[in-house]
Length: 401
Image (cartoon, rainbow, N blue to C red; front, top):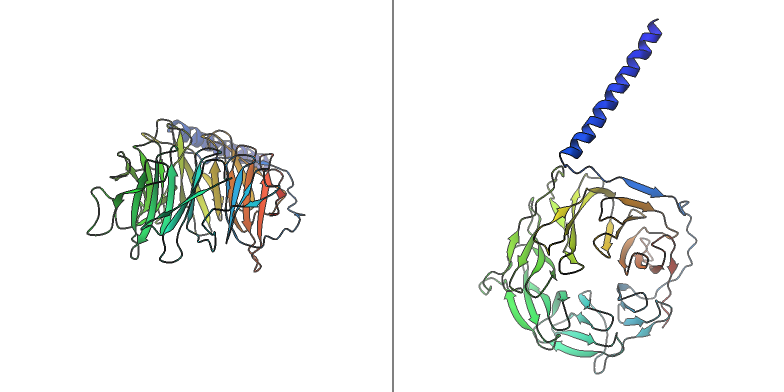
């Protein structure tokens, strides 16, 4: 009899817990609090036994620029290479009256279509930066010296005429002097429209305090940059409504239910897919073991308002890229996480390559993507991979000149 009473008590306790837990979930949903995103897992090539062919690249790969499935560029230590067949063959980019030598880390670029693009190469000494422009997909390039500009930080064009360049000119601990230049003729001439240098700052300039991270323009008037100022609002949006002349801080509303530690919310630069659709992401450190929560913010009205997604928890270093407002990837902790509904749900997939180490990647579309990976071993070997099936299988690309 005592045994039956004990069983009955256990059953009643279990039912009570079930009801309470489900009530808690329903209550959170009703209150519109963000419940953490569930990650569905796709088991594919999950034995983690990698049989990739060893392809050693002789030089460090600084970045890869893919314009479409076939046309792209690889920037190495002392060279820029071009492919027109999706990476099967590569040719050196040659520029008349200009030698591409020891390239600095300060290289910025932007392409507005498969024909027209710019690459700005910063200076490693006291010389001026150089801007390279192509109008035929990289077959030929015009080169121009940017007088008075050395350390380049960001470049953004909205059409074949209008573009903005951010240059770093120095600073102090926790502070940074930047200048913003605007061109109306496709990069032939540049006008300085903003500087935050103390005693020389222009009206409505960005603050001297904090580090500045890039520029992103939606149209001829409206653009954003990110300023790392420290404190709980560690990174803040600054927005311009007059083409980059004046800037003001834009308060970011943190979703309810996202607890910020003393490091605050690290936010990325907005990426726009059209004049109205764009997104950025915020990262908050969750614990001391390297786990982080990522929240995605989307706009469909050109940045007037931003709607946040449910958070996703990841571990370790990560890289993010989206091809549109709905489809994007996160690479973290050796896995690829994919979303097709604007970061509301994620699918974890295992790949047939090793994704540990220093990883950068770029998406051309929902199926085609490229990864640059540097081994964490002492050899520091660089690898270049390509996928055509959404990240499930990859082929390693050897850069044959």
